Image 1 (cartoon, rainbow, N blue to C red):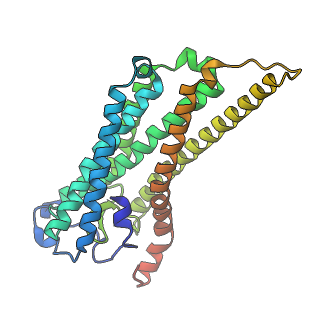
Image 2 (image 1 turned 90 degrees about the horizontal axis):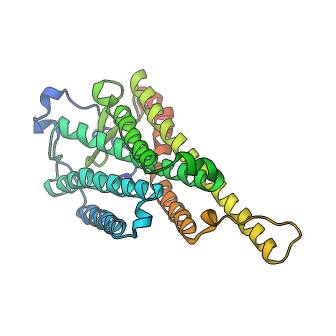
Length: 301
């Protein structure tokens, strides 16, 4: 859904103006008819169906997996990721589809606030869980003793709860005046005002973008550290097999097939999330840094 809406380019100033007061939340005149392309409806519906089906398949596979896999910390985090992504798809895509069908925004300001909060929350919550998964893999591979003593399913559940609560606080701020929700081109979705001319709105854009940058950086660093460790372990194992004079103990818990599968799943999920998240994060910083002064001077984005 995000990729579909961003494909239309930058914001349209007629669509992304600040929202009317909450008192007008049911006044449809505040949300005039839109000129939308019918092919975009097919794109949005297809992405919604693929997202729901893919996450349902993932949840079913996790439910029927072996008992020993269900007892792992990584399994708990993957379940949290699948459920979070499914909820994010179900909370946002139907609104986009309804907008295409009705050719106008189907609700008022309250719906826009809810949609923007959902976009913000499920984007940052998903990235937070992915970051937690990367940290979990880093500790399991690089600090196996600490991991075995302190990391378990209870810690994973606590990490999920902490991620949800922290992101709720982060993403609800625009609803209380720290930032703004606006409707973006082509009028089918709402998000934070990333061209805010007021200091609070600009601070929130940088805050949200900064949190996403930190999560992306930690995820990448942990994955790189895990990759380096696995390559080093593989080289030491090869030296053992060739009868090298130096003997390096093999760590079954680290070099097992299950650990390798978790690592490749982690890499795949990281690539998918980065491809979807980085362009949006870059756009937040670029728009907020350069466009307010340009708009104040009379320019149009």
